[in-house]
Length: 140
Image (cartoon, rainbow, N blue to C red; front, side):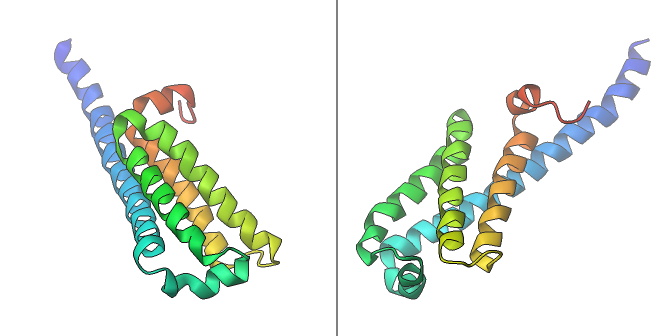
């Protein structure tokens, strides 16, 4: 009987293993994107000056926004604080989308990238964290 149980458990364990790695890859993509954005905001704000000007943000805000983005990325990357990080990342990305909607750039590349990163944030967390899957059972 235990051999039969192992045959049924093997595909499920394999699927969980694949989901875990898919979640890690999606989460890593989010962390890399946020780290790059935060680093540019801190160390090379001139590269994004035109975008800041278009959206109505002052250049000196990069000294505040950069560390916030980096903190969100770190919180999201650490398993113990990943849910808090995901909430903060989602809030940040929602603000970015709102800034572009406000100036009439509905469907612009920055908006689509923010939307994609938000989906990857929660999709990655869902795939890599059993607690989130238990809280939001999308698939039975």
